[in-house]
Length: 358
Image (tube, rainbow, N blue to C red):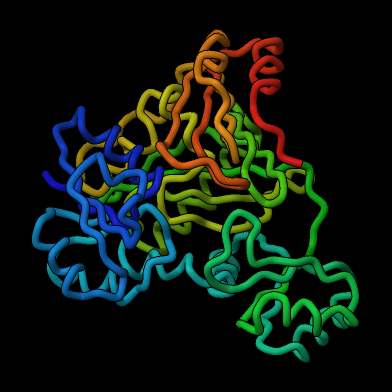
């Protein structure tokens, strides 16, 4: 079986590493010839609006999947005329517009922050005046890792925020106090079988994920599973889906979904019976899903901006290092490290070796 992957970044790389033991082959499609997954399979360099090159991909594979969500729906629909695409173009589209995403959650009875559609500086001023508290203003499309969003504390700031964010359609969301940020990784196969990983507690700095820790027997696990199951069933979803929430005094408030394997699930490579990457492949091929239970307590740290000495990292007992083959650059995710069944001392040692993000 040959899997086509739209995108050649680290998520595609880890999909291939999970798939090769299963006898799978991979064809990556990306506009960047130096994409870090390019050496792990056949590589096609092309833009996502190049229908001729996309047809070339479709003719070489048995199924197509995505490793990032901001792929034009027209590209996915074009591919789907020739080869199965999972998650479907409709499911990917649902996660591409933050306003539509929030409306989906609300329609399914999933709690969200108050939100407002914004299409001008005047409508942003009006939303701020009506709400009264700080709003988080986000571009409706293409934002990630904290990019494309700004706080708005008073209506007088609306013009500046509208201009800074590029004068594009926005969503203004209620800024809510929360106890922690959590996410659940779920998987659904083509035949409708589902699996759920333990809820993960996440720490972000400057909008970028820095640390994730599997939260065994979390009291909010059942509610998180219920919410993500509602979304997967509504979208007839196939593959791995991540759902991020705010924990507000024991209530889950929806933040966003990601229709793909997800950074907060990287700990599953060593820490779960079946990794999110292998289960994504099983799901899109309609193979039996693997067990999602944990092997051990795990914590995962992103390596951001610069690369520590691998020997120093691997000197920490229980450390598993994954470098992505990407050139160092400030704010860039270069790899991750997972500690399994760690002691407090081992966590402190690892944290002292990782580059600081101020």
